[in-house]
Length: 158
Image 1 (cartoon, rainbow, N blue to C red):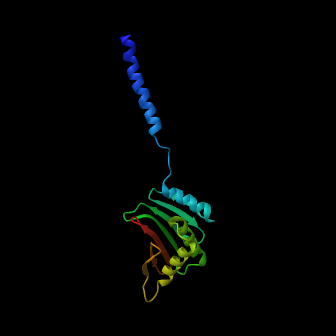
Image 2 (cartoon, rainbow, N blue to C red):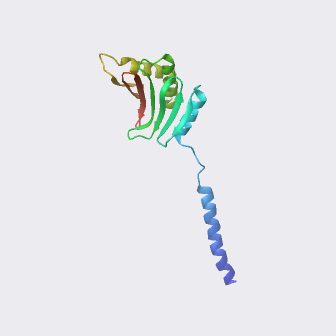
Image 3 (cartoon, rainbow, N blue to C red):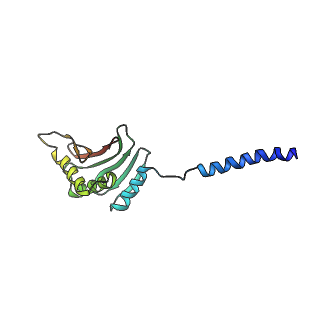
């Protein structure tokens, strides 16, 4: 009888640990950035997911030369980067506004106003780099001789 109780204790301990491991393990969950990229692909026509590098997810769209989502920066939670020709078309503004509205959960009309205002402010008086804040979003627009780009972020503390 003493031998039977010695064998049951390790077996009972192993079974208890196995049950604990099964019930404490959380289900696999995709990264928030991946979820947002899939949502952009599903809601904006023409968006394709190209490469996922962990911190950056590169997307493609006919209206933009470059399009990407950045995750977990030092002072931001998520960022949207888009690049187009020096004089962007209305399709580019609509793309950036739609993506900003989905990512940052703001109305599309507000996102369209902010992105178009930021890119149109660049010029002779303000220069080729404009930083502005609109509806709790930080926007930074830059341009070169051939291209214009916009970075839209929201701070971690907001």
